[in-house]
Image (cartoon, rainbow, N blue to C red; front, side, top):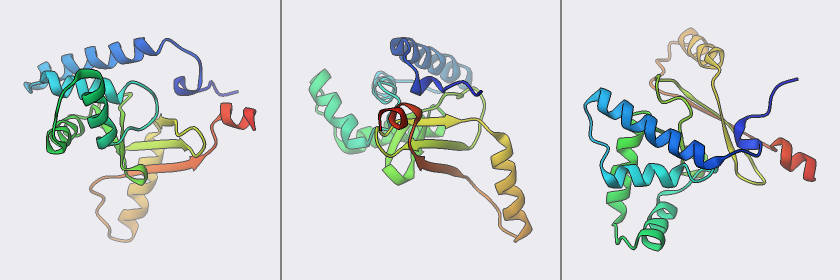
Length: 161
């Protein structure tokens, strides 16, 4: 039997957030890039749950929780930085962002997205990326990036139904 992903099990979510922020500090320092206070705060907001968060949701949280009057371009620049440095993923179908579980090594995003509770579970299955690359290569297509999004019901939502 497969173990349930962390996003679907009760756990100390504050640990997820603090771990993600500490890892971001380390990775940015190692790469020689600045994790400004705003970038760090945006990352913290993205990690508040295992549900993807849109840029305008982040903007609203910044205003409500921090009293900041940040403009949309400011949030988008912070998100672009976090994307470029592998700290978050963009879920295109939801136009939202989620924290990366494995920022220490570059990889393609693969997600199981619950259509009911909107939890997104990041998979780390290199074989999926390899299969896509091989299929693309066989038809002469050069893959520049990939995000696989699979929609369904997570175990807790299936149990509740």
